[in-house]
Image (cartoon, rainbow over all chains, first blue to last red; front, side):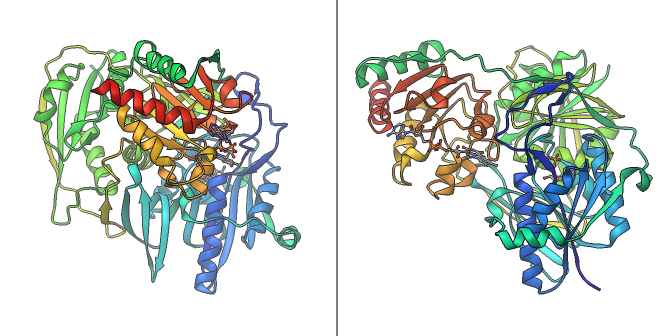
Length: 258
Length: 319
Ligand SMILES: Cc1cc2nc3c(=O)[nH]c(=O)nc-3n(C[C@H](O)[C@H](O)[C@H](O)COP(=O)(O)OP(=O)(O)OC[C@H]3O[C@@H](n4cnc5c(N)ncnc54)[C@H](O)[C@@H]3O)c2cc1C
Ligand SMILES: Nc1ncnc2c1ncn2[C@@H]1O[C@H](COP(=O)(O)O)[C@@H](O)[C@H]1O
């Protein structure tokens, strides 16, 4: 049986986009959306694993609206063989998301490993991988910056503070949330993009998955633009005077120097 | 009275300063604050915890034959066991590498709601405020569930000293490690350097630094102020400094009291990581740079001139 490598990818606003708040708790979505930056690393790692094994299938999966197909195409251009779009009408919390991804994966096949990003840049939840792991009963590591596959297990390095690392050993199947240090995604070439257009996107309506809702939830009840009210004041004078003024500001205004 | 648990983070025998703001946040609700201390001697921290209003110190000792100093799965189970024994429904920890490992594991095991990186929490109403959409918005999130978990962004909530007498609860918890997840090794980071997520002052360099060697200018300057050194993604991608120093949307989100940006243009992705700073100071040759128009103070000048002068000035002062 072929080894199934799943990668969870999220369709998120372009990091350079200007975000405008709409209806008090959501955003105006007429901006460009892309594959979540950490998920690019997840797709790259999944494709590298398949190459390393010389077999297997990489399946990208996403929960989102119809537009998510664009992100799935990017994931396929970066190396996923096919993809699954779990259709919903709105942004869902990670409790629901993990249930939906689990149900859709269960319907599709039996995972050898699941990759995710370490966080989504829109919701910044940092938790979907752990919820997914708990749902499957698989061990989880996040912030993974090095992955070494072994027979039926994996050794990973998880980043901590000040350049520290924790090295963990996980049995497979497992869920890995990858960080940026793990690899360097190579951007798809034009032929990759063309090929990705022909790859399969299986669409499932989330309603058809009959997900048992959790009694727990997280909902964004209001959203405000994060206003910057800084009044840029210039420190003038000769360099020596500028530095003296700067020291005075640090000492007397910011009170960070003794 | 209802109880709120706070997971205390200890580094090299000291309670990290950021814990104190988290305790203040837990105290704001009219509840009892239970400080959970993992595998350390709680008595050592009695004074500081009682000075910040903690009602109980819970010393959790995980043990067993296969005990390792850090096993997030095992520690997750130990914390859940303690929460159940003490009827703790609300739990706070810091959004640090430790909190990032523990909180989501606990939330997943309890099927409980969790909001990470909170800048404010209202425990009574189950509301948390956090940045969303790459730091461009602030969202208020309503959580519902039998438990509530929150990750607190270090250093955004100010500590509030209040005197209490804390009772001591000792909880040895024997949690076998699952065969599925094992700690192989723990490699600590460089302890000589202040961590950017905890620093009061960060001095960061960008593309303008030009080389790994030139970053020494920032390290020297940082040393005179007890500051941490940060970097833009360009400086990291060029291999001048490690990724752990990257500030921004795909790096660390920091909130120091002062952020000094040297030769950093101020891209939207960089701002996502440092816009919560108390004061922003830009040193840039280009007065049109976004960093300059979005800061509190700026010096239009060459960092290679200004930074060494600043180091010199601060060294003189220290004498
Ligand atoms: C998905 C995504 C995620 C990203 N995430 C991050 C992130 O987390 N963090 C991040 O930083 N970037 C991130 N970026 C990159 C970001 O878009 C910018 O490219 C980057 O921040 C620019 O770095 P910089 O300011 O060092 O360089 P530049 O933009 O090149 O700016 C250099 C600055 O130095 C000034 N300068 C030059 N010489 C001197 C001198 N001698 N003295 C003083 N000033 C001088 C110049 O005037 C200029 O303002 C991300 C990009 C993408 C697409
Ligand atoms: N709607 C979604 N569809 C697919 N994957 C997702 C979705 N939301 C989150 N993920 C995955 O979970 C990771 C962590 O997301 P988060 O918990 O929101 O920070 C992301 O990097 C994705 O890999």
